[in-house]
Length: 259
Image (cartoon, rainbow, N blue to C red; front, top):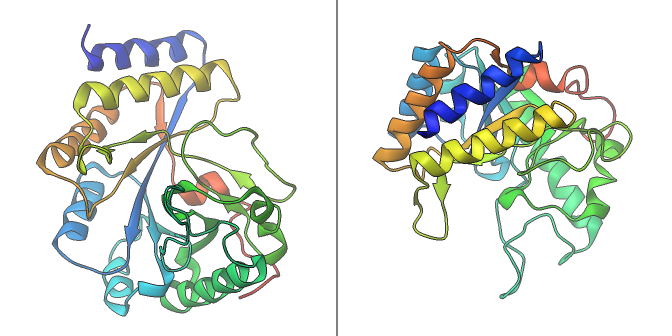
């Protein structure tokens, strides 16, 4: 059975259960305009899919803000602060870890939020996307205290609300094989991950399944698959693609804290 048929069969199971499968789309590591971003935005516009762009605050440019001002269906999430690795090998890369004092890390995040707010205004959502999808648990517990209402990493979420006042909505299908390249993970591997995530959501809390792209690291295969996937999603019944603003509302409204 092909991956596409397996996907159609899984969506049919949602239909038979009288439920609608929810998807969303997050793209990481944005900081400036350019041909790769234009290609990403063209796909989102052509297939009329909402896109959440995780932006690195310390590197974000006015050119990016200007480019996104033309794209009303794109939400901005905060991708850490500088996407800087503070781990020491052989530890896995992490920016939001315990290698530095927590107050220093949180102070950077507050500075980053102010940069996003200045550049993107209300388009920026108070949702933290940790670089490399890693964040120390002790820092998670402090995010609501400094104004964040959402958290997005990778893989099945352990809880809908990891701490009071914080909603977690993750991604589950990474189009990139980082160990082997970066290169496209492959159509069958990506579809298998998508079917697995949908089945798990159907058996669990109905978590929206997130597709994760990286416009700056994608090869031709990844670009072709991304467009094909979203084009097919427009033709499947019982599938709803939601925007980050929908998913994280009302939590997405920044309240209190820094910024």
